[in-house]
Image: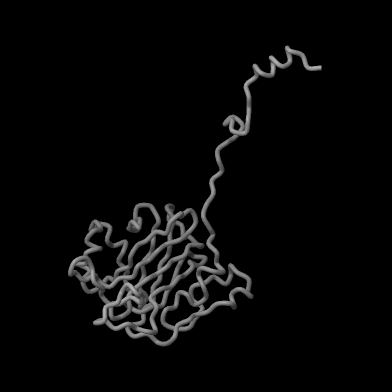
Length: 233
């Protein structure tokens, strides 16, 4: 039988409910990813100039899924074919093996395959889309085959130096990290209106160097002493 004394004792005791912080430890952290390898970095998505399997990670998906997609290049684009490569590093300088890089660029004439670029005086290449995606491999390296882009209009009446827009996706990134790749010998680097916004001491993080084998190399550092310059969306 419950007595008045029992009820008073219960009411006097501190109440502990599901929101009482004393019954919880630190809230566990969660991360974003790994991204959906089946649907995002498709087979051939890193080759913008010809049919190949560049871009996806067949070791991260069942064989029957890897067969479902392929390159959709319709023909040979105009311009100089180039190879791009780089490694994505975390804040501790360790390669990130499950990141994804996305590129968007103009064609060799300096025109984008977009309705927003309707300049009639600049030729549109029907065989060049200008968009691609690549997974990093087990060593954190991404690779693309594409066309060296032409110069595009900038703010006012300026011309931008040839460049490729890059976006980084990966674990712990709630938003993509946008940046750019310029070429070390690019025409107009010294007057590019966007590159001029970057402090001179950090511009090298956006400028790819040509290696002896002809590949243009630009590593991406997400943080740390040599952090890549990223742009606001």
